[in-house]
Image 1 (tube, rainbow, N blue to C red):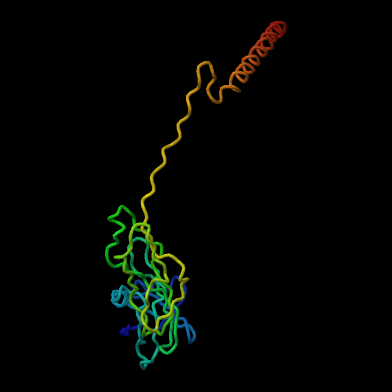
Image 2: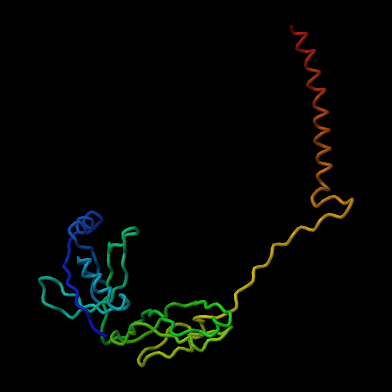
Length: 238
């Protein structure tokens, strides 16, 4: 794996105000975590996008070159990026410092290769796992993990244990976890229709409706005389 160089600058200002001012100047704030104490940096978003374009930015090893300082051996991985939700521009970057002689755990994307015969047999391919967690030296991190589906028939399943990893790469993900399945599509069940009421039989829910209606009508009749009795009382006051 190639190691890419990225020019950065040290920054002293902290907080939202300093970050906004930095972005207005054409830079974005970044922080390096890991072996040594954390370091606050400023980086060009264009240069960072260039690095991300290599191998789609997945597990790219970057050598940070701090402006005005002697070059030091400080390789990092791009751990996290914060982007603007609308424009997609980079707002902040986190780097993880690594040691080239120590194994690290990383997540590597799974790439499906070939055509599954089960699809032609009427099945639907469902990918359940899109990344594998592995452990290896930084220089041995694979760009992706290919999964050949050309032998997967209808009702076939591919598990993590079926994958052959490159030499020097150890599996961390549970080997019994399924990666993909090819299964027949499920048929939609028709909605159950209400059974028609038999002749002379009240429809469902009607048994309690008649007594309730009768009770309501009776209550109305009882209230009428009460309102009529009040009329003479008002006339006597006049």
